Length: 350
Image (cartoon, rainbow, N blue to C red; front, side, top):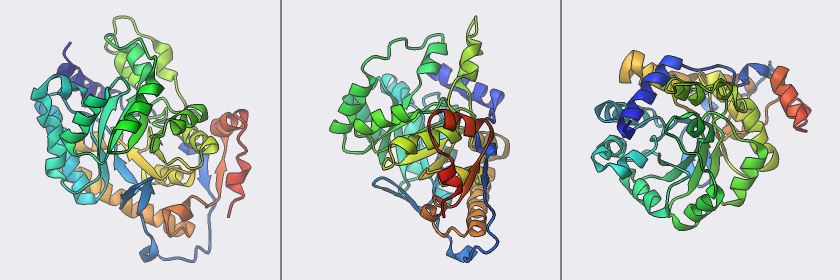
């Protein structure tokens, strides 16, 4: 199967399989504050991911491109929505366009429609420096997002089976590119050990992309003659992964993604330590059902709801939100406890 046909199939299966809900945010609760001592007008949503200044912590995460007219139209609409709402945007893997230049237009449209916005280019960890430079130039990217997708590749019938040398290639990209490098999982989460290794490689930030959202194990199993069901329950829940990422490497910016579907999920991910929160599957569903205008309205609504939540918590800024008390329970608490992370520090902070 060609890359372009596979891209189109992935979109159809992502919409069909939907979001898992199991990211762990349901086991994270805010401590109510009866006297928040702030006002809605005082809330500021701007944040930073390393050297990148964002007007909002909300991000449209990597979805597609390279699948012909359908993926062109999706990327066009996502870019317009990002422009109109002031949020960042990442394109899907650009390898298909590097191998078939007829697909370049499905990515270039993002920068054409959103000339002043924050845009991430995207490639897999197999990318060479030359390919990375071309991908960045293709969309005039502010950063390069390198995705790690071992489980997806192993489940994919035509996927890769050799993952040697990944960290070395990432280090080389960091050293040779003029834009920062962000490393992203694809729905299976990152452990503290992985984040520590990536920090040592010099990456700007990590996108943990935890378990609980679009399940690429399930998607690729739909494309296999004989499924690998164990990969459909594989991964680190998003809430756990955000905490793990911050536990060992406090200074590395974290983007939370994986099953985030609401303003409350975003608020909880930021309170756990993330600098930004990215949504892909949920925004794709809204776009497919309600169109571009519906997506713009939804992002606008989420931003307003996030301000309301922050007002209730007395958090004027994202940094304030990262200091509010949180109660962690259930499977999320048990996982973190087994990993040697004391969750009481979240409940007792002021």
